[in-house]
Image (cartoon, rainbow, N blue to C red; front, side):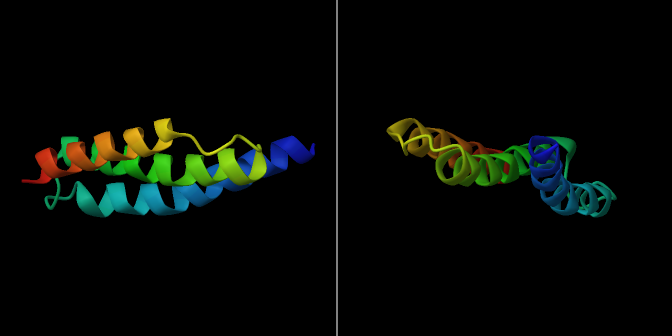
Amino acid sequence: MIAVLVSWGIAFFEYLVQVPANRIGYSGYFSLAQLKITQEVITLCVFVPFAVFYMGIPLKWDFLWAGCCMAGAVFFIFR
């Protein structure tokens, strides 16, 4: 039961940010591709702290490289 509540809590926070952004953004301000990249960046920003602080996974260079790839994707999709 605790695992369910924790996972729902994390998903709830993520959806609080994503769903309004998608509704507002797709009404003509952002393209679908821009919204998808934004969603992935939000997911990575939620997942990495969860993995490190809650799950106890050591902070690895892979997280940095994934963040750099996402930053590159943001740059190219929004230019």
